[in-house]
Amino acid sequence: MRRRNGQATIEFALTFGALILPLTLGIIFTSQLLWVWHSVVEFTRIGAQYASTHCASGGGENVAAYMRQRVPVNVDQDQFAQGAATITVEYYQRNADTGQMEPFACDGAECSTECVPDAVTVRVTGYEFRRVLSNLGIPPVPLPDFRATLPMESAGCSPDSTVCAQ
Image 1: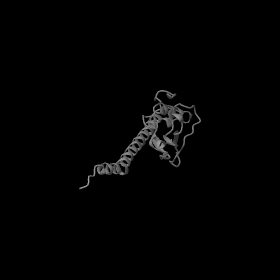
Image 2: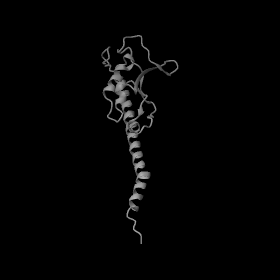
Image 3: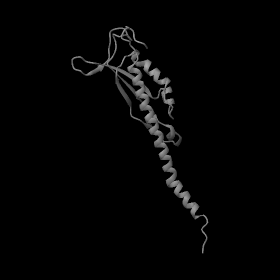
Image 4: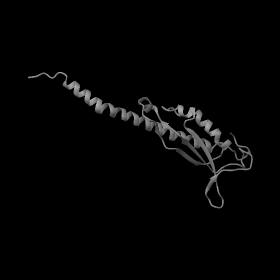
C-alpha cells in the first residue's frame, strides 16, 4: 500500500485557489459596490432635500458646497473632494400654459420670495467605483448618474419675510 501524505493538501490548495478565493473576493467586491451605490443614492437624496428647503442661489452652489462637506463615509469618498464625481443642481418652474417643467429663471432678486422655483433636481455624475479594482490593475466600474428630484418646500423662506435664508 502506497502512502499519500500530501494529496489532501494539494487538493485543498487547488480548490482554494480555483474556487474559494475567487468566490470570496467576488462577494467582497459586490458588497462594497452595493454599499457605495446605496451611499451615493442616499447622498443624492439628502442633497435634494437640502436644496428643496434652502435658497435657490448661484445655480445651486450652496447645495453643492453643503453636499461636499457631508460626503458619506465610503471607500471612494475622495472622488467628491477632488471633483472626479460632480454634483449638479438644477431648478425648474412649471410653465403656466403647457404645464411642463422648464429651467428656472427669475428677474427678481435672487434668494427672495419673488424667486422660488417649483422643483429641484440634484445629480451626481462621473462617479466610478475604483477601490478594489485599481489594486488589481482592472479599470474602474463607471456607475450611472444618480438623480433625485423634489418639489420645493420652503426654499428657506418664511411666509412673513421677503428674503430667504441661505
